[in-house]
Length: 97
Image 1: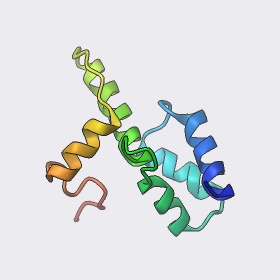
Image 2 (image 1 turned 60 degrees about the vertical axis):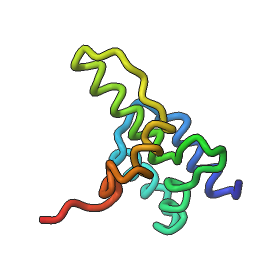
Image 3 (image 1 turned 90 degrees about the vertical axis):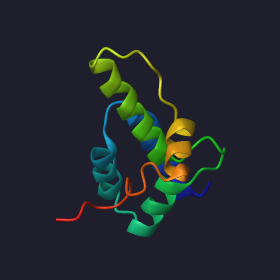
């Protein structure tokens, strides 16, 4: 892992479960790192268990389901599988206006 990605990973580790996807992106942008580097980090899946983006989405889903009284643990692997199946085709795209 390069120094920039290590820095982003440390931020992610400290912030995990505390911020949603957009808030975490804002934290990454505040580092001053190039957008391409941040996007590469967010999409990286070095361990095959789901990207950082998938992990954040899984955490958010688990929290939302818990708030509705549904006790289930979503994993990054679950999100990755749904994304690959096309179920969430546009999850990483800006909504059309």
